[in-house]
Amino acid sequence: MGLRTILHSDLNGFYASVEIMLNPSLRGKAVAVCGSTQERHGIVLAKSELAKKAGIKTGMVNWEARQKCPDLIVVPPQYDQYLKYSKLTQEIYRRFTDKVEPFGMDECWLDVTESVGIFGSGMDIAREIKETVKKELGLTVSIGLSFNKIFAKLGSDMKKPDAITVVDEGTFREKVWPLPVDELIYVGRSTRNKLAKYGICTIGQLARADAELLQRVLGKNGIRIWIYANGRDISRVMETGWESPVKSIGHGITCTADLKNDLEVWKVLLELSQDVGHRLRTHELCAGGVELTVKDSGLHARQFQTRLAVPTQSPMEIGKTAKILFEKNHHWEMTVRAVTVRAINLMDWNDPRQIHLLDDMAKRQKQERLEDAVEEIRRRFGKRAVHSALLMGDIKIPDSKIHQVVLPGMMHE
Image: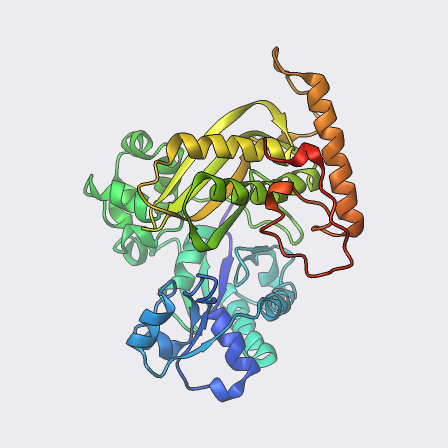
């Protein structure tokens, strides 16, 4: 591909920085954006530089953050504002290149290889972007400049805030290889721990490790991170507007109170599956399998999955499959804090599908017509216009003008 010029731009303390920019009285104070304690999402989502210096970390629970920093100012998140400023920042990036690939709300890769003849060197472009974001939006960015996406991302993390770090082809070994292995993107805690058992603790040790060993230990991801550590990443920065193919569709929730029995869990699974089924229809996909993630009150998460005999969009079928997975694998040693239902092994709804020899096609088609009708009612009158009878005592409908329609076929069997 030849030597490329890739930037990774990361908005510093994004949520907190937006809050301070919108409310200048917060400037120069320790600020943390936190979720609601009442809804059990009471953790730090973002923090200002002063809060960071006081020891506040992302993911820390609210009460712990207040103990560590008594002067901490806690503000609720304003996601509409964060989305607005994310889009405005990306508009600035697109002045320099059409190859802008978002990585979350506050990070983007930019391929400026073809822009250097117009705007100057990669460093010139990085400086211009940094100053423009600060001047026009009142926010700061840290930018990594490198010859591939992985090292550009690594560079943006190496020095913060409001900084530019270069990781070039000639010196990346001296700059990158001494770093802990989990500084590399896609090396999480579990992968780090597995690598540590083989004495692989730095990126350099990963780069020099035997690729076949890594594949045996980590599968495909072992080869992938070995390629990254050796500076051989050649993945493209995708053009503006590109969307990655949908590989799974899921919906999860952290419950306001722990779930204590199978019936309570089934109600949550059924509600989550309604959303999963709706999104499968929106994308014209069907699920070939179901994955269930359960987090207990001790914050231990376990994941289970199974294939479906016949691919489906049916919320009821997805929910029942998740219910079977739960009842088979959860033994109620602890109450349940959070659950996620995910449709996996997706395929196009319009593609031919293998039917099951023992499947009752007449019953299946009747269920599909029922769910088609439910989707149409919800489309016309709102999401809560019709719902399962099992959930009637749990769903609050704010608009009293909406007629509640309960279909017998949707009741718990």
